[in-house]
Length: 186
Image (cartoon, rainbow, N blue to C red):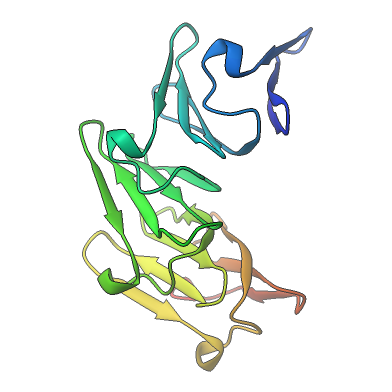
C-alpha cells in the first residue's frame, strides 16, 4: 500500500511502514498522484516533477526532461508501460512518456481543456481525462473526443473519472454529483 502525503510518500508492506522524502530523491514532498506500472515500478506525481521507484533506484523527470509541467496531479499507466501525466494546477494539458521520449497534448491538439484533474484507462485501452472546466476528453490513441453538459454531464468542472470493468465511465462533477453509468462511450 502506497500513501502520498504533503510530507512525502509512505509504503506499508503488511507489517511495517517505510517513508520516503526528497532525501530519497523523491521530486518533492507533496505527492498528489501514484500509479504502478506493469513492471512493478511505482510512479509519483509531485508538485515538482515525476518520480519513479523500481524498489531500488529513484529517477526523477522534470520539464528539463520533456515533462509538460512541474506539477503532476494525475497519473495513469497503460499495460504497455506508457505513462500519462495530467497537470491540473497550471494548465499544461497532459504529457505521455513512452519510455524514451515525452509528448505533450493540449487543447489545440483536441484535449477539452488544459487543466486535467484525473485520468482513467478503460479495459479497451481508451483514456479518459477529467478537466477543470472543459468537460471530459476521450483519447483512443488516434483521436480526441470531448463530452460536455450537452452530452449529459451534470457540470463541466470535473474532479475525477473512473472506468468500471464493463467499460462504463463515471465522472465526479464539481458539486453536482456524478455522471455516467451504462454507456462506454459516455
